[in-house]
Length: 112
Image 1 (cartoon, rainbow, N blue to C red):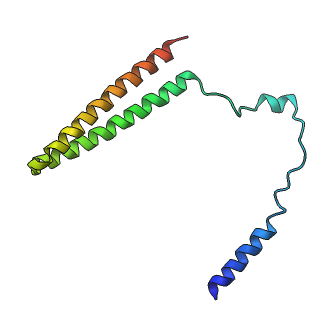
Image 2 (cartoon, rainbow, N blue to C red):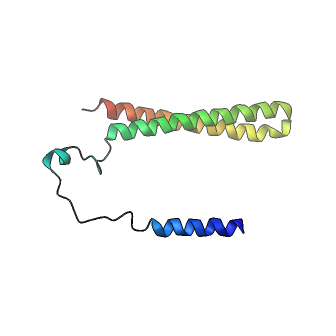
Image 3 (cartoon, rainbow, N blue to C red):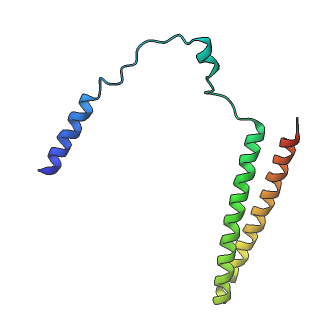
């Protein structure tokens, strides 16, 4: 019974809110209002490069954490050595990506 009451109340609230969002016609903006609009602006290449470098750093940190855990597991169980080697190779690949992303970000940031 309680579930039915909640459903009825939710349905009533939904029906009551239908008329709330009533968009009217287009509005003409003033020059001052238009000067403050930034929607749709594309990010600069420097900010994109910085985001890529940051992502590379985070991926590298995660790969190192995974490799450390895998190496610790391999010390306890010799059968886990293959997993540790794979994790080490993953960390090396993540480091390579980090270097490439950081180099690109530095070049883009230094370009006028």
